[in-house]
Image (cartoon, rainbow, N blue to C red):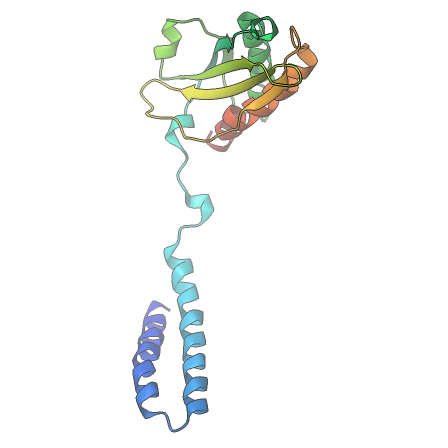
Length: 204
């Protein structure tokens, strides 16, 4: 198959200058060049298929392999005048841990052993089996309307190198005093599904 492809492509390329120099008529030469081009493109198709690895053969991302524990570490900050509308750090971490536990544990899930809330300087952050989810909430006032809280997630894993980029866009929610739990949970679920659950499931 490979030999036939190479011979066909080589013959086509060799014919191009000869066809241009010796064509008896403009139309005949044009038709021959078009036909030769079609044959070349047709012949190259199997070669591309043979040399390109199928999607199923792609290696898993090592960053997400052999994760036994997912830990949540939260930080909250607010601009001047918006502090009263910012979520409370412990409350936000609890909701995030509950959402991650629902996404990651149980039948058909990525098989993570536990989902925990971490504190700063927690020794489990240095454990290579721990995937750390850094959840950041930033509350800012708007010129018109209530303040907005942006939720973003970053990942860290000791010894695994840098995390893949652009896993999930931030989620924005309206912050009115203490934002109701029913508005925060769906935003957290979308964010954590894209940034954590989906990559873990794809690379387990």
